[in-house]
Amino acid sequence: MISEKLKDKKETLIVIGGYSLIILFVFIIFLPIYKKWKEFDRKALMEEQKVQSLISMGKEYLRISGETLKIKREAFSAGDLSAVTVVQRLTPKGRLSAIKSNRHTFSPDLQIVNMEVKLERLSLSGIGELITTLRQKAIYLKRITLKARYDNPRLYDAIAVFSALEKP
Image (cartoon, rainbow, N blue to C red; front, side):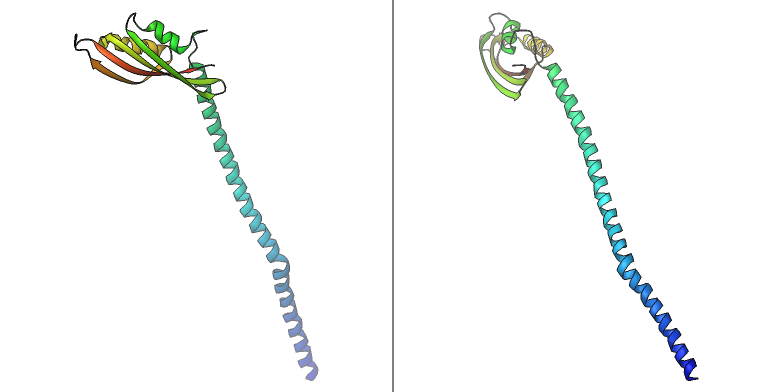
């Protein structure tokens, strides 16, 4: 009887020891592996987000690069003539009273030319034709102020600001 009780206690201790070893195995070996696996999974997700971000930035770069090329192609280029010279030549004779221009560097190979042009004694249709002609030459109207003439109300004096991109 005593030996059976000892045998039962031994078996119970062996079973408890076995369970303890399994629990110990789980806590010492499996949990650190599980934590590292979860950490790896989290980092993989972060890397995936970074890759998606890089892909979207690449698409944005290509879009902006395409727009830049389009702007460079559309930039004013009339051989050796500047945008100011073209405005002077396309304005009807005797109607241009003053022109002021300033240039700002837009990029190493492009600059913005702003021109304030004072025109005298032009009809509305003449002003419209001038604006259309200049636009065809990649010179764009930014703003215009019209003032009817006292001596002939059908004619106008105008102050127009034009802008163009030029290659330096």
